[in-house]
Image (cartoon, helix red, strand yellow):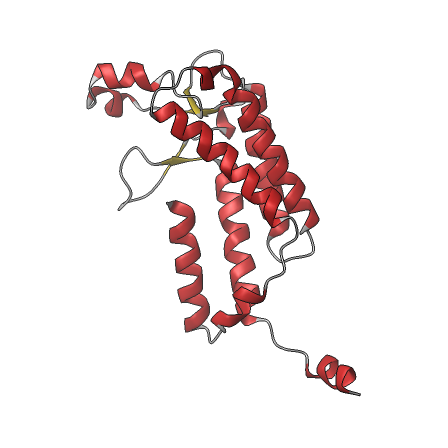
Length: 192
């Protein structure tokens, strides 16, 4: 959801700055099929876990890690595009903390949040495959989902340093693409 908000906000800012929306549709991203497979893996793991198919919990850490490596691969292929340096760094940080913590993103849950939720749902959340609750065994916890989103987001909205870098990369990609000036010299050369 946050990614959609950042994309829409970036487009609106680009339009207010005089950028052209059409230029976004002309971005040539390499490896779109691999990107789609990576997202499908993550979505599949999340959806199967949500409906309670237990076999997913066995393979989900591997599928999540594979999906991140696929995303890194696609991002490296697009390194020349604006913003992808941030996106790669964010993906690397997220992948690092996920690999070290058994294939799930560690999440910090504040005491006041725990006090305001149903204990049964809290215990059930411990078994979620995409995220895991931080504990004393969590490695590099500061790279997990520990940053609280400001209002108007719910108190439970948390993101990681990696997520912030990915969002910055998306913002830069959209802004620079929308504001990019067409090079008339290149057009003249191609006509001649």
